[in-house]
Length: 147
Image (cartoon, rainbow, N blue to C red; front, top):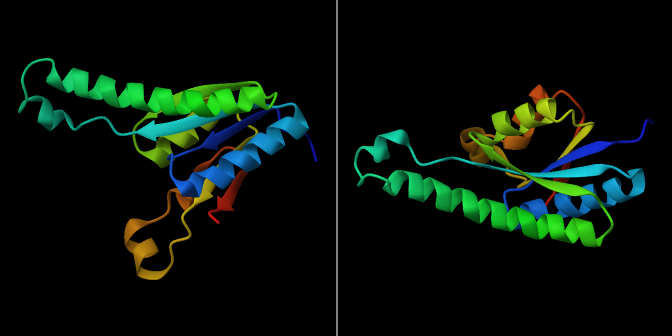
């Protein structure tokens, strides 16, 4: 099997994504790969922009982005301390589309992501970001189930 050079790990900052980050970190170490640590967020709806004072929408969106950046930096720091070259990716939009687009754009060899393990009716109605990424990603996708 060819070694991975660029591993994109998607995180939603929940406990379900922690095992996926740990697995991606180990794979990056073993392969000498660059670790791209990504989080996709949804900006506030544009319809809200008309309902709030001028500048409030932009400030709100910038605050969301800043929080995501700060959380990603903590994971980048952890990877760096483990000897892995890592970079944060702040993605905007629906998680599945943003992850797949980022994997294409960054020429990822592998996407690693956690799964909540929903079953039955909740999976039917909520769907699965992981399953949609698996079906559209340009590279292999490894899912890691939460403990």
